[in-house]
Amino acid sequence: MIILFIVTSFWAYGELGIACEFALRVREAGHKPYFIIPPSHDKTIEKYGFPYTTLLPKSGQVNRILLTDIELRLKPEIILLADFLNYNFCESHYGLTPDDLRIFSGKLGTFDNFDWVITGNQMDTYGFRADKFGEIDVRRYGFRLCPCPIVNPHSGERENTYHYSLFTQNLPYRADATKEWKIKIGLPTDKKLILFTHAPWQESYKQYPDVEAFVKASNEVFYYLIKCLAKEHTVLCIGAKGYFSECENDHILYKEQLPPKEFEQFLLATDLFISRNITSTSLARAVLSGIPSVNFSNSLFFSKTKLLRKDQLPFKPIALVDAILEKLERCYPYRMFPVGWYKFLAPVLKNNPYGKTLLLLEQFDVTNSLKRINELLEDERKERLQQSLRQYKQTLNELPSVAQIIEKIKG
Image 1 (cartoon, rainbow, N blue to C red):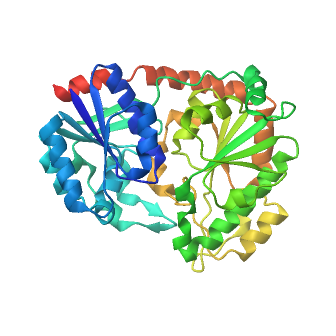
Image 2: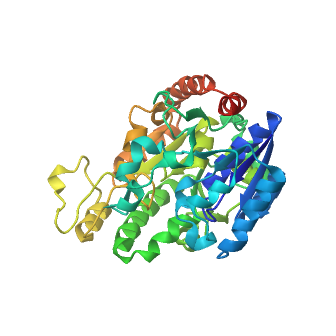
Image 3: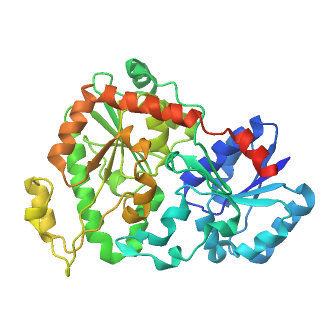
């Protein structure tokens, strides 16, 4: 059976990675994955060894011919959207609309990475409610595949919704072997390695001038925290050029985005993984592989009409943070930096056991964050996280396999 994966986002590598992880298990189950992708993803798909067709930007007529050709030539029995949200708005990029999917005779479905049925009506981007997203009905795109993490595996069975484990093969991480990997990749062995990533879309805020001050303030505080950690440890940023590549110095090392296998070598050398995006697949891979991890978010909100009350802050800010908050006119909460999604992701994170497998920290609470990170680096908090991770993995192991899900969909 041929299963078609349609990828339209040219910058969201997380969604591509989720689709590829699923496709690997599709192939292991004896089926044939086939991809439709943007030109930017051809090298990635080639490394996985999946056959594919490339979309032509700004050419709706040609792309519809490509879809028709695949239907006539391959007759895929299952069609999966890697990112239904992006596809819903990809007409400007590829001239395709939801109606164009009717060309396929197979069963249509989508990856639902955030359990859209319970989250979709309250998406907040850059601190504002995004009404146009709330109008999207995920059920329009058929059945839903919900990868865990980040979806809560305890959120219950629902019609046409399939929860499954995002990864089945974790990295062979061993805390006592990180020095060996540091030697292989040429990093100092006398210091612990702290790794964080920076994605291309995290630079997209520049088209929103009204949020630049907040992003600048957040980066300044995060950079201060990183510099504090770098006094005793090696800190490495891997990812897109931008704020951190321009800040490269004795405090922060920088590498551009790496191929998956090479990136995995750096993860195996890592003593602490830091994220500012709770939905990150790199964070999920690190956590599930047993790499001690932390994720920063921000819960503070104030503006010109809702002023900051310092006496109501849940923490005592350091002088730098106090000065930044004093000058900042607008501050919005986020769980995915810098986009926001604080309220949007709240339902899917509520009582989610994934949250117990890593440290969740507040970006402006520098004192407490440094204290808890240093405790984790000194092994004082690792066992509690590892125990939660063992319980979480057991839960994931009880979810249906990809082969079982395919049989149910076919049924």
